[in-house]
Image (cartoon, rainbow, N blue to C red; front, top):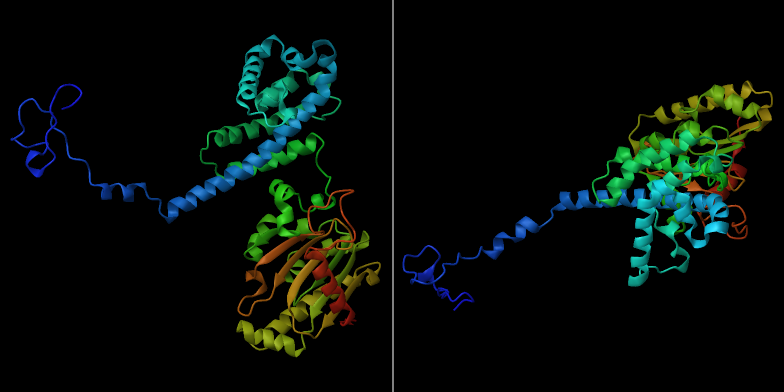
Length: 415
């Protein structure tokens, strides 16, 4: 008997929902769907999981950048406006700074703070203030309203507002957990880096001018020693880290490999001449084109006899022509070695904390263009002023630098 006083039909086969034998005064119930039909509709296949992971990775990177920007904006607003309003208004200085135009959103932030306090969501006493509950657009509004106060510290208001405009799209997408395209993510990362630089937080890592510090690297880079990027081949490396960014403005270049194509074929001789004349010291270590190691490498790669040795010899001749045009040829050294080649490495400014290295191992069936590439930053983690322990070298950079020096010592010069 149901709660409404109606009798439910029996569940046997003779009393289905469409049966004509249903007794009067009963309610007909449809048969439930077979449970086996639900499973496949709820399952995620490999493509769905791949899409979900891609979304999560992009949203995670964007969130880190947005978090850094918001924290920096909050610190800047507090540093500039608190001394102006706090002496008169005390803890309510944010409400006073918002003024009549911002009463609605600042009161909403005050209410959210009170709710968070009652429910125990404030885990850090330092966050128990109204400023911590303002969003990025609200922090921007405070800065715009009081621009004369910020003008002595920020060069261009337009740059700040343009960067924040670009970030607003990403902020809305991430806050609502919607799909973030790679193009929008790249735009957000560039805008965030530009804004952080404008607000005075860039340039604290010596090598950041050559190899910008990624937000994710800055937070979790110590998990990967000094490896800051891995590319499946040199083509992908060159898309994100062109030769001009690697070698341009260098004060020292040390390179070891077979033919050193990354430098010789992707960085013009004129640029090398200008670098050397500006004081850059260059040491290039090629595999001897007449050695038996070249012949073995040709067989490994399935190349015609003499093909690789001629390519290496042409690169050496090109570098000799570059050296002949220098005012100080001694600053541009070329040597060859006869040992089995194990890797190619380009160490840029490797004698200082701002050093960057591009390293590839030689694989039996893959040419240099096809081999995986590691990008290293000198030091076992992100190097910041006053933090580096000179007695600890736990990264890969010192290993390849030492290998280069050993190979250089055992090699012979090219006249």
